[in-house]
Amino acid sequence: MKKHLYSLLVLLLPAVAWAQPTRPAAHLLGQEPPAGPGALARSATEKQVARTRIVYAWDASTGTWSAQPTKSTITYNSQGYLDRMLTVDSATSQSISRVQFTRNNKGYVTKYLREAWVNGRWQNDVQYVQAYDDKNRYTDFLQQKWTNGAWQNDYQDKQQYDYYGNSTNEHYQVWENNAWQTYYHVRNAYSCNSAGNITEKTVDEWQYGMAADATVPASRYVYTYADATSKNYSEQLYQVWNQNSYADASKIDNIVWDASNRMTSSVGSNWANNTWTPTNRVTTVFGSASGSSLGYERLTENFLDSQWQNSLRSAQRYDKYNNYLGNTYERWTANAWMQTSGSSYTLAYNSNTDVKASVYKIYQNAQGGFVNQTKTSFKDFAVVTAAASVAALPTSALQVYPNPTSGKVQLSLASWSAKHAPVQGELINSLGKVVQTMQLVPRQGVATHELNLSALTSGVYLLRLRTSEGTVTQRIVRE
Image 1 (cartoon, helix red, strand yellow):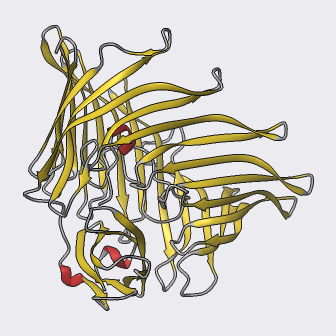
Image 2: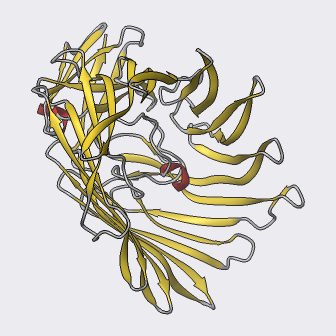
């Protein structure tokens, strides 16, 4: 079964997607209950987890790994999710820090508390508090730091959504001079066609000096679709508020989408002197040679001297277990690609395909290459049996036919969230390995997908679909 990301840092990486007028991205603590470092889901109720983590820091002055790594002991709750983590000096066993997660009954993190060992006792350090709505979307986030013996506000944001899950109100504030000060506040309003697709989005923004809850018109996005049944737009027009009306500023057209509803190419243009002028072209290739469907390579070209010329290139890589391997960013300079930034994870697995070690590097221009940062090993693996898990949808919500099958299978999922947003799924073989990933696309109130098992060997496979309402699983027999 698909491996979960093996460190908290990787868990916080942004999703790979181009901006679309759909659901907002998950916040810091995540909309999916995170598993522990190195965790491997064995079934709907079991997870393979690492209970010990050892981290070495790279000493650039000596060119060696630190002789005194830190050691973290990790515990899990009855749902099989990360509960506590105690970090000590591995040589002296001196306490350094400890972290505790509080979760709601669906497994979502509602509080993160970190304490530091100071002068022979535990002392509060930082905490995050997060709330969710009934669709498991975060609505409130608060960060506080322990200062002079009390919790001091640091940062907060609040979110509101419409019926379809689109963000309608985003309000970010920082704590200054004993009061909350707004530094970003937008209100979004949407119009939809008969198929439920967004045709217009207006954005009102807060400006410096205004009251905290005040906003004024700022911009508008207008989406054009090929026909009434299309789920993906063919053009995105961006307009700015100018002299009491919206004026054209830029647009994206010549858009191509793949079967998974991911934008693979587009052309951007700016409006100037009463005409559209091409400015950039973006091409994205999803998937990678390692076998993961999550990776991508993206090329941005600028339109200069009446021709397309290379400008930027980026990539994100994952291995066949969908574990993150890093990214690269390059700029076209003097007729050659020059790397500007990037990161790299080198992973090692044990015989059970658990991540047993990783080396993290970042690209540094001064050195002209990737430089070691941390080396982590995971040990003391165990299977955690969940007494309760994330809310599950009734099996009756999912229809799979024909089953058994010798080839293609039709999937149909009827639920609230399946009517309004794509549903992510995966197919797992008897060894626990993900052999296919998929996305069910909402059509006429039901999320559907055709699954092709022709290339798979005979046997029993587990289909698992995840929605904001919960998870539903079903076995499929390949004859």
